[in-house]
Length: 138
Image (tube, rainbow, N blue to C red; front, side):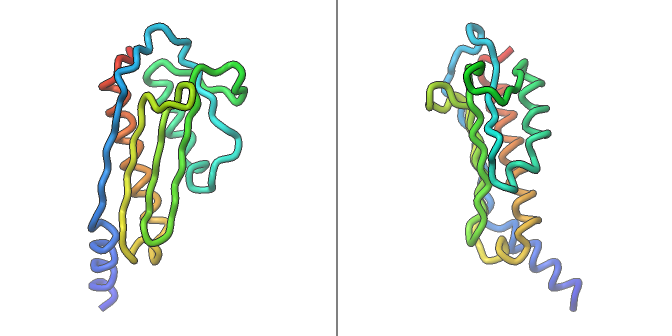
């Protein structure tokens, strides 16, 4: 009985998941690739900053907590509730140049909030990495 309940819960969490990434075609070759990451992100997003930093480093970016020194700003949110959604964007002058979103609707996200958040963050980071790879970043 418990095994069936766990399987049902996992299936409920996975149903309705969507993820996508976007790149604007911005030419990164003329930028310094310094990314400002705000000190105060929501709890779920803060937990995954090391993974975000690794992705940025992989594509030649450096991270700073001084927005005056940065060419870009990272926006990263993870909203939970009936619909779990993770959004990440690399912004230039408040315009997204690379972004990704991943969402999962349904009551299962409220019951297993931590599992749902982890799944959405992993999916959004994978889409973000793909979008960075598709952009002109070298």
